[in-house]
Image (cartoon, rainbow, N blue to C red; front, side):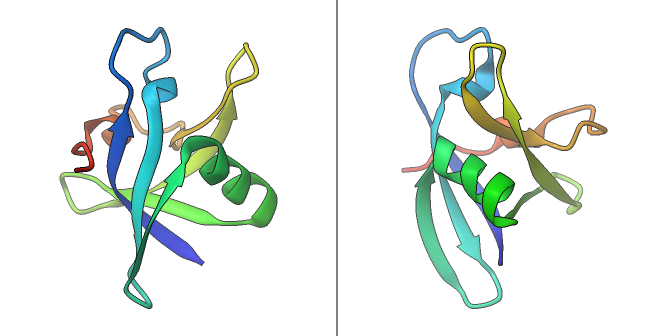
Length: 96
């Protein structure tokens, strides 16, 4: 199953790692038109351990996959693939 991340819910404040400010992702499974909200660590686990696929659509309409990453402090998060220069995940709108 693949889901497109459509918005992010972030904590207020200053973070050394901006990905750790993300609490939740709102997503849509475009194949079956189902929406949901999932927290950061569950998306990480789903991609890493269950072969889930999450992606964003950048400003050019290109599909960019998300990869699971662990910070030096052991915090789980996701970001766009390493070869992407500008991370459009962080540019997504805030969820309502």
